[in-house]
Length: 304
Image: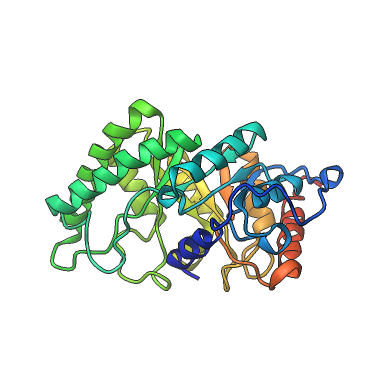
């Protein structure tokens, strides 16, 4: 499953708002006490909680999840953003990433150095600052788009760095961080940014607290493997993680990745940020939703 499908599926979940008739049993007394801030997304628990985003957030809280991410937040109307933000604030829930700009999946934008594309990107970033302030978000996802096959990679990298420096100048006064996400070649062939060392090099060149790495464990397992050593090598530039097992891009323990060990490593590094659950459910309906919760209980049990 690719990012475009996640954005589309999460947007469907915004159809209803602020219904107070939850169609599940509140289980506060059974709430899990996770060691890390795992962040589900809208649609992940809709068989239990219904289509209403607030009901879904309440269900997440009742299961012990203390964070939430929403790729599509920038495209939701202001009233929806305010409703979600207010509910999260009252319930001490942390906001994760949302996608901060139009992503060019099939044609170059930032890599090309095209001034119109650069202007469009910077406009999106300015708009995302207002959204981030509205929903109390600290991070926005940035994907630099497709390669420009007519340019040497060195020139493309220079173009990307120059644009990201401009974006950082807008973001820094607000304490907001754009997190660069390398995406794997199998799901997203032809994109400029695909590897963690490449993202690390760019962040070092931009040299801003507002330009860091989103290390998506699913993508980097496919792209480069060697996960813990690569996380260690990039650690000082990583600001956010996302999760998905491989193959399948579903919850932990459905594929080959040893998430229990990875989470233990991240925890022992004193990571206090968010880990976005940017994956599907391996089974349908309520059975699949309960399987997701059980999977996180198992992989989070790394202190015993």
